[in-house]
Structures are given as C-alpha cells and as structure tokens.
Amino acid sequence: MALSDVQIAEIWCAMPVLSSEPLEAIAFARAIEAEVRKQDEALIRQMLEALESADYNHAGVSAAITAARARLGTNPPPGPNVPKHEA
Image (cartoon, rainbow, N blue to C red):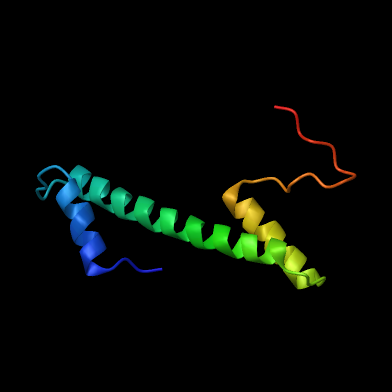
C-alpha cells in the first residue's frame, strides 16, 4: 500500500527540523515504514476477520488464515477442544 502525498507531508511535518544528515533521513524513512506497517497490519487484520467469519471450508482459506495470524503474531482463538493458553 502506498502512502498518499498528504500522508507523507503529515509525517514530514511531525518530524523535527530535517537537514541533509543521514541519521535524520533514516529517522524519516523509519517513520514512513512505521505508517505503512500500521496500514498493512490493519488490512491483514480485516482480511483475517473476514476469512474467520466465512463459512467456507477450503485448504486455501485455512492457509490464508494461518499466514495472516503468523504475520500479525496472533494465536488462533481457542476452539471447543483447544485449551486456552495461560500467560
């Protein structure tokens, strides 16, 4: 997913005064990366919720759910025969 010009400008304005220093360029790049990651995770979470609520039994759907959970670092909800994970 690409950031819009407005989103990039908002991130730029939120940064301290930037110069040509490499460390400041890295900080700006990291801020862009964080925003893109946040948007990606929101999309993956929406996809996961839609797949989990779908009444469709197919290996591809199961694989997509597993991949989405792995990307988000979440565990499957406990089912009737799956014990809850104690923290």
